[in-house]
Image (cartoon, rainbow, N blue to C red; front, side):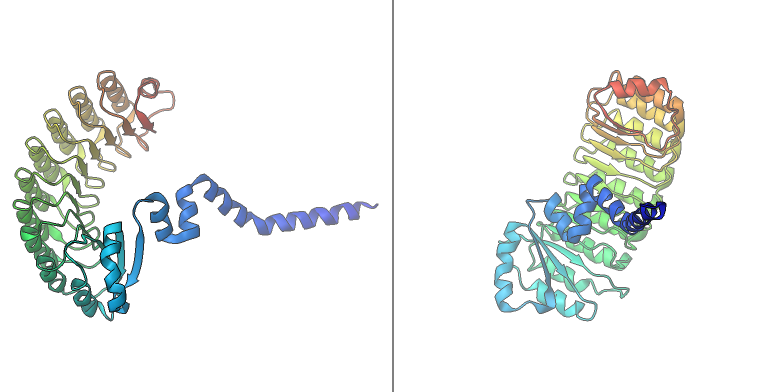
Length: 360
Protein backbone atom coordinates (compact mmCIF):
# COMPACT_ATOMS: atom_id res chain seq x y z
CA UNK A 1 0.00 0.00 0.00
CA UNK A 2 1.44 3.41 -0.99
CA UNK A 3 1.88 6.44 1.22
CA UNK A 4 -0.93 8.24 -0.63
CA UNK A 5 -3.33 5.48 0.38
CA UNK A 6 -2.49 6.17 4.03
CA UNK A 7 -2.91 9.93 3.65
CA UNK A 8 -6.37 9.86 2.01
CA UNK A 9 -8.21 8.32 4.98
CA UNK A 10 -6.36 10.70 7.31
CA UNK A 11 -7.46 13.76 5.32
CA UNK A 12 -11.01 12.43 5.30
CA UNK A 13 -10.89 12.02 9.06
CA UNK A 14 -9.63 15.60 9.56
CA UNK A 15 -12.35 16.87 7.23
CA UNK A 16 -15.02 15.09 9.27
CA UNK A 17 -13.60 16.44 12.55
CA UNK A 18 -13.58 19.98 11.14
CA UNK A 19 -17.30 19.80 10.38
CA UNK A 20 -18.14 18.11 13.68
CA UNK A 21 -16.11 20.49 15.87
CA UNK A 22 -18.90 23.09 16.42
CA UNK A 23 -21.31 20.33 17.46
CA UNK A 24 -18.72 18.81 19.77
CA UNK A 25 -18.17 22.20 21.43
CA UNK A 26 -21.91 22.66 21.98
CA UNK A 27 -22.22 19.17 23.44
CA UNK A 28 -19.33 19.87 25.79
CA UNK A 29 -20.96 23.09 26.97
CA UNK A 30 -24.26 21.31 27.48
CA UNK A 31 -22.54 18.62 29.47
CA UNK A 32 -20.77 21.20 31.65
CA UNK A 33 -23.87 23.32 32.26
CA UNK A 34 -27.24 21.67 33.00
CA UNK A 35 -28.87 25.10 32.83
CA UNK A 36 -27.52 25.71 29.31
CA UNK A 37 -28.50 22.19 28.30
CA UNK A 38 -32.14 22.81 29.21
CA UNK A 39 -32.03 26.26 27.62
CA UNK A 40 -30.89 24.79 24.29
CA UNK A 41 -33.15 21.75 24.36
CA UNK A 42 -36.35 23.07 25.85
CA UNK A 43 -36.27 26.88 25.89
CA UNK A 44 -37.28 29.08 28.83
CA UNK A 45 -40.27 26.96 29.80
CA UNK A 46 -38.07 23.89 29.88
CA UNK A 47 -35.69 25.74 32.17
CA UNK A 48 -38.51 26.71 34.50
CA UNK A 49 -39.89 23.17 34.47
CA UNK A 50 -36.50 21.63 35.24
CA UNK A 51 -35.17 24.14 37.73
CA UNK A 52 -38.52 24.86 39.37
CA UNK A 53 -40.22 21.44 39.20
CA UNK A 54 -42.94 22.37 41.70
CA UNK A 55 -44.14 25.24 39.52
CA UNK A 56 -46.19 24.02 36.52
CA UNK A 57 -46.22 26.23 33.44
CA UNK A 58 -49.22 27.15 31.34
CA UNK A 59 -48.42 29.44 28.41
CA UNK A 60 -51.56 30.83 26.77
CA UNK A 61 -52.39 33.63 24.38
CA UNK A 62 -55.04 35.53 26.27
CA UNK A 63 -56.87 36.72 23.16
CA UNK A 64 -57.39 33.07 22.19
CA UNK A 65 -58.99 32.09 25.50
CA UNK A 66 -62.51 30.76 25.20
CA UNK A 67 -65.11 30.17 27.89
CA UNK A 68 -64.04 26.54 28.03
CA UNK A 69 -60.35 27.29 28.61
CA UNK A 70 -61.14 30.04 31.08
CA UNK A 71 -62.88 27.46 33.27
CA UNK A 72 -59.55 25.70 33.73
CA UNK A 73 -57.61 28.81 34.75
CA UNK A 74 -58.65 28.61 38.36
CA UNK A 75 -57.33 25.06 38.62
CA UNK A 76 -54.09 26.01 36.87
CA UNK A 77 -53.70 28.98 39.17
CA UNK A 78 -54.00 26.74 42.20
CA UNK A 79 -51.38 24.40 40.75
CA UNK A 80 -48.80 27.11 40.20
CA UNK A 81 -47.41 29.40 37.54
CA UNK A 82 -49.56 30.77 34.73
CA UNK A 83 -47.80 32.67 31.94
CA UNK A 84 -49.82 34.85 29.56
CA UNK A 85 -48.38 36.23 26.34
CA UNK A 86 -50.16 39.37 25.19
CA UNK A 87 -49.81 40.42 21.57
CA UNK A 88 -49.19 44.09 20.77
CA UNK A 89 -52.28 44.37 18.58
CA UNK A 90 -54.73 43.08 21.14
CA UNK A 91 -53.16 44.12 24.42
CA UNK A 92 -56.09 46.25 25.57
CA UNK A 93 -58.69 43.58 24.81
CA UNK A 94 -56.40 41.01 26.40
CA UNK A 95 -56.17 42.95 29.63
CA UNK A 96 -59.91 43.41 29.80
CA UNK A 97 -60.59 39.75 29.08
CA UNK A 98 -57.87 38.58 31.44
CA UNK A 99 -59.17 40.69 34.30
CA UNK A 100 -62.56 38.99 34.19
CA UNK A 101 -61.34 35.41 34.17
CA UNK A 102 -60.16 34.71 37.68
CA UNK A 103 -62.12 33.44 40.58
CA UNK A 104 -60.81 35.29 43.68
CA UNK A 105 -60.41 31.92 45.42
CA UNK A 106 -58.03 30.53 42.79
CA UNK A 107 -55.10 32.83 43.74
CA UNK A 108 -53.22 32.49 40.42
CA UNK A 109 -49.71 33.73 39.75
CA UNK A 110 -49.68 35.98 36.69
CA UNK A 111 -46.74 36.85 34.49
CA UNK A 112 -47.37 39.27 31.67
CA UNK A 113 -44.85 38.93 28.88
CA UNK A 114 -45.13 41.71 26.32
CA UNK A 115 -42.47 43.00 23.95
CA UNK A 116 -43.73 46.29 22.60
CA UNK A 117 -42.54 49.88 22.35
CA UNK A 118 -46.04 51.17 22.88
CA UNK A 119 -46.80 53.01 26.12
CA UNK A 120 -49.49 50.87 27.65
CA UNK A 121 -52.58 52.12 29.44
CA UNK A 122 -51.83 50.52 32.79
CA UNK A 123 -55.02 51.87 34.30
CA UNK A 124 -56.88 49.01 32.60
CA UNK A 125 -54.91 46.45 34.55
CA UNK A 126 -54.70 48.50 37.73
CA UNK A 127 -58.44 49.11 37.98
CA UNK A 128 -59.05 45.38 37.88
CA UNK A 129 -56.28 44.70 40.38
CA UNK A 130 -58.22 46.93 42.72
CA UNK A 131 -61.40 44.94 42.26
CA UNK A 132 -61.77 41.56 40.60
CA UNK A 133 -58.30 40.08 40.18
CA UNK A 134 -56.72 38.07 42.99
CA UNK A 135 -53.03 37.90 42.06
CA UNK A 136 -50.03 36.93 44.14
CA UNK A 137 -47.27 37.71 41.65
CA UNK A 138 -47.09 40.29 38.85
CA UNK A 139 -44.11 40.26 36.48
CA UNK A 140 -44.10 43.15 34.00
CA UNK A 141 -40.46 43.57 33.08
CA UNK A 142 -39.38 45.55 29.99
CA UNK A 143 -42.79 47.11 29.34
CA UNK A 144 -41.96 50.83 29.13
CA UNK A 145 -43.64 51.55 32.46
CA UNK A 146 -42.95 55.21 33.17
CA UNK A 147 -43.62 57.43 36.17
CA UNK A 148 -47.35 57.53 35.43
CA UNK A 149 -47.58 53.75 35.18
CA UNK A 150 -45.65 53.31 38.42
CA UNK A 151 -47.98 55.78 40.14
CA UNK A 152 -51.00 53.78 38.97
CA UNK A 153 -49.47 50.58 40.35
CA UNK A 154 -48.68 52.39 43.59
CA UNK A 155 -52.36 53.25 44.04
CA UNK A 156 -53.11 49.54 43.65
CA UNK A 157 -50.60 48.62 46.34
CA UNK A 158 -52.32 50.94 48.79
CA UNK A 159 -55.48 48.81 48.79
CA UNK A 160 -54.51 45.43 47.34
CA UNK A 161 -53.96 42.65 49.89
CA UNK A 162 -53.13 39.67 47.67
CA UNK A 163 -50.05 40.74 45.71
CA UNK A 164 -46.81 39.49 47.28
CA UNK A 165 -44.35 39.94 44.40
CA UNK A 166 -43.98 42.82 41.93
CA UNK A 167 -41.25 42.73 39.28
CA UNK A 168 -40.70 45.99 37.38
CA UNK A 169 -37.16 45.29 36.18
CA UNK A 170 -35.95 47.29 33.17
CA UNK A 171 -38.64 49.96 32.92
CA UNK A 172 -38.65 53.75 33.30
CA UNK A 173 -39.99 54.15 36.84
CA UNK A 174 -37.53 56.92 37.76
CA UNK A 175 -37.38 58.89 40.99
CA UNK A 176 -40.99 60.07 40.92
CA UNK A 177 -42.26 56.56 40.28
CA UNK A 178 -40.06 55.22 43.08
CA UNK A 179 -41.44 57.90 45.40
CA UNK A 180 -45.01 56.88 44.55
CA UNK A 181 -44.24 53.22 45.20
CA UNK A 182 -42.50 54.17 48.45
CA UNK A 183 -45.64 55.92 49.69
CA UNK A 184 -47.63 52.79 48.93
CA UNK A 185 -45.15 50.63 50.84
CA UNK A 186 -45.81 52.69 53.95
CA UNK A 187 -49.37 51.34 54.08
CA UNK A 188 -49.11 48.04 52.18
CA UNK A 189 -48.81 44.93 54.35
CA UNK A 190 -48.78 42.10 51.78
CA UNK A 191 -45.94 42.78 49.30
CA UNK A 192 -42.80 40.81 50.16
CA UNK A 193 -40.70 41.22 46.99
CA UNK A 194 -40.08 44.32 44.87
CA UNK A 195 -37.72 44.42 41.87
CA UNK A 196 -36.84 47.92 40.67
CA UNK A 197 -33.60 47.00 38.94
CA UNK A 198 -32.57 49.10 35.91
CA UNK A 199 -35.20 51.81 36.37
CA UNK A 200 -33.24 55.06 36.19
CA UNK A 201 -33.43 55.59 39.95
CA UNK A 202 -30.76 57.72 41.64
CA UNK A 203 -30.10 58.78 45.23
CA UNK A 204 -33.37 60.72 45.44
CA UNK A 205 -35.47 57.68 44.56
CA UNK A 206 -33.41 55.49 46.88
CA UNK A 207 -34.02 58.00 49.66
CA UNK A 208 -37.78 57.71 49.17
CA UNK A 209 -37.60 53.92 49.34
CA UNK A 210 -35.39 54.15 52.43
CA UNK A 211 -38.04 56.20 54.22
CA UNK A 212 -40.60 53.53 53.40
CA UNK A 213 -38.36 50.76 54.76
CA UNK A 214 -38.32 52.47 58.13
CA UNK A 215 -42.07 51.94 58.33
CA UNK A 216 -42.82 48.88 56.19
CA UNK A 217 -42.76 45.52 57.97
CA UNK A 218 -43.66 43.10 55.15
CA UNK A 219 -41.05 43.58 52.39
CA UNK A 220 -38.31 40.94 52.55
CA UNK A 221 -36.64 41.32 49.13
CA UNK A 222 -35.62 44.60 47.46
CA UNK A 223 -33.70 44.71 44.18
CA UNK A 224 -32.20 48.02 43.04
CA UNK A 225 -29.53 46.60 40.74
CA UNK A 226 -28.22 48.65 37.81
CA UNK A 227 -29.53 52.00 38.91
CA UNK A 228 -27.40 54.95 39.98
CA UNK A 229 -28.14 55.46 43.66
CA UNK A 230 -24.50 56.39 44.45
CA UNK A 231 -23.06 56.89 47.95
CA UNK A 232 -25.97 59.09 49.08
CA UNK A 233 -28.54 56.46 48.17
CA UNK A 234 -26.58 53.75 49.94
CA UNK A 235 -26.28 55.92 53.06
CA UNK A 236 -30.06 56.47 53.08
CA UNK A 237 -30.74 52.74 52.75
CA UNK A 238 -28.17 51.98 55.46
CA UNK A 239 -30.00 54.29 57.82
CA UNK A 240 -33.22 52.40 57.10
CA UNK A 241 -31.52 49.03 57.74
CA UNK A 242 -30.70 50.15 61.26
CA UNK A 243 -34.40 50.11 62.14
CA UNK A 244 -35.95 47.77 59.56
CA UNK A 245 -36.54 44.24 60.84
CA UNK A 246 -38.15 42.52 57.83
CA UNK A 247 -35.79 42.88 54.85
CA UNK A 248 -33.71 39.73 54.29
CA UNK A 249 -32.31 40.37 50.78
CA UNK A 250 -30.93 43.65 49.43
CA UNK A 251 -29.37 43.83 45.95
CA UNK A 252 -27.45 46.99 45.09
CA UNK A 253 -25.25 45.77 42.23
CA UNK A 254 -23.87 48.27 39.69
CA UNK A 255 -24.79 51.38 41.68
CA UNK A 256 -21.45 53.17 42.18
CA UNK A 257 -21.89 53.39 45.94
CA UNK A 258 -18.11 53.59 46.45
CA UNK A 259 -16.25 53.28 49.76
CA UNK A 260 -18.53 55.83 51.45
CA UNK A 261 -21.66 53.82 50.71
CA UNK A 262 -20.01 50.56 51.79
CA UNK A 263 -18.92 52.09 55.10
CA UNK A 264 -22.49 53.23 55.80
CA UNK A 265 -23.86 49.75 55.04
CA UNK A 266 -21.20 48.23 57.28
CA UNK A 267 -22.39 50.34 60.19
CA UNK A 268 -25.93 49.18 59.53
CA UNK A 269 -24.85 45.52 59.54
CA UNK A 270 -23.52 45.95 63.06
CA UNK A 271 -27.05 46.46 64.39
CA UNK A 272 -29.35 44.91 61.75
CA UNK A 273 -30.78 41.52 62.68
CA UNK A 274 -32.80 40.55 59.59
CA UNK A 275 -30.62 40.88 56.46
CA UNK A 276 -29.20 37.57 55.25
CA UNK A 277 -28.15 38.39 51.67
CA UNK A 278 -26.35 41.53 50.47
CA UNK A 279 -25.36 42.05 46.82
CA UNK A 280 -22.73 44.73 46.18
CA UNK A 281 -20.94 43.59 43.01
CA UNK A 282 -19.44 46.23 40.69
CA UNK A 283 -19.63 49.13 43.15
CA UNK A 284 -15.99 50.27 43.39
CA UNK A 285 -15.97 50.00 47.17
CA UNK A 286 -12.19 49.40 47.27
CA UNK A 287 -10.02 48.37 50.19
CA UNK A 288 -11.48 51.01 52.50
CA UNK A 289 -15.05 49.91 51.92
CA UNK A 290 -14.35 46.17 52.28
CA UNK A 291 -12.32 46.73 55.45
CA UNK A 292 -15.36 48.41 57.01
CA UNK A 293 -17.55 45.48 55.94
CA UNK A 294 -15.03 43.06 57.41
CA UNK A 295 -15.22 44.83 60.77
CA UNK A 296 -19.02 44.57 60.60
CA UNK A 297 -18.79 40.82 59.95
CA UNK A 298 -16.98 40.40 63.26
CA UNK A 299 -20.15 41.61 64.97
CA UNK A 300 -22.98 40.59 62.64
CA UNK A 301 -24.45 37.14 63.24
CA UNK A 302 -27.20 37.14 60.64
CA UNK A 303 -25.70 37.68 57.15
CA UNK A 304 -25.17 34.44 55.24
CA UNK A 305 -24.33 35.66 51.71
CA UNK A 306 -22.13 38.59 50.63
CA UNK A 307 -21.40 39.36 46.96
CA UNK A 308 -18.35 41.61 46.46
CA UNK A 309 -17.64 40.60 42.85
CA UNK A 310 -15.42 43.14 41.01
CA UNK A 311 -14.89 45.76 43.71
CA UNK A 312 -11.15 46.41 43.53
CA UNK A 313 -10.52 45.18 47.07
CA UNK A 314 -7.04 43.78 46.35
CA UNK A 315 -4.89 41.73 48.72
CA UNK A 316 -5.38 44.09 51.68
CA UNK A 317 -9.16 43.76 51.44
CA UNK A 318 -8.92 39.98 51.23
CA UNK A 319 -6.74 39.90 54.34
CA UNK A 320 -9.30 42.00 56.24
CA UNK A 321 -12.08 39.58 55.25
CA UNK A 322 -9.95 36.58 56.19
CA UNK A 323 -9.43 37.98 59.67
CA UNK A 324 -13.17 38.64 59.99
CA UNK A 325 -14.06 35.05 59.09
CA UNK A 326 -11.96 33.81 61.98
CA UNK A 327 -14.66 35.34 64.18
CA UNK A 328 -17.82 35.31 62.06
CA UNK A 329 -19.97 32.17 62.28
CA UNK A 330 -22.95 33.04 60.06
CA UNK A 331 -21.52 33.77 56.59
CA UNK A 332 -21.76 30.77 54.24
CA UNK A 333 -21.19 32.35 50.79
CA UNK A 334 -18.65 34.99 49.73
CA UNK A 335 -18.02 36.13 46.14
CA UNK A 336 -14.63 37.78 45.61
CA UNK A 337 -14.23 37.20 41.87
CA UNK A 338 -12.51 39.91 39.82
CA UNK A 339 -10.84 41.66 42.76
CA UNK A 340 -7.15 41.40 41.83
CA UNK A 341 -6.29 39.13 44.73
CA UNK A 342 -2.85 37.55 44.08
CA UNK A 343 -2.76 33.76 43.73
CA UNK A 344 -0.19 33.48 46.47
CA UNK A 345 -2.07 35.65 48.95
CA UNK A 346 -1.98 34.36 52.52
CA UNK A 347 -5.58 35.52 52.85
CA UNK A 348 -6.74 32.91 50.35
CA UNK A 349 -5.39 30.09 52.52
CA UNK A 350 -7.42 31.36 55.47
CA UNK A 351 -10.52 31.96 53.36
CA UNK A 352 -10.41 28.52 51.77
CA UNK A 353 -9.94 26.87 55.15
CA UNK A 354 -13.11 28.49 56.49
CA UNK A 355 -16.59 26.99 56.19
CA UNK A 356 -17.58 29.64 53.65
CA UNK A 357 -18.30 28.78 50.01
CA UNK A 358 -15.77 31.05 48.32
CA UNK A 359 -15.79 32.35 44.74
CA UNK A 360 -12.50 33.88 43.57
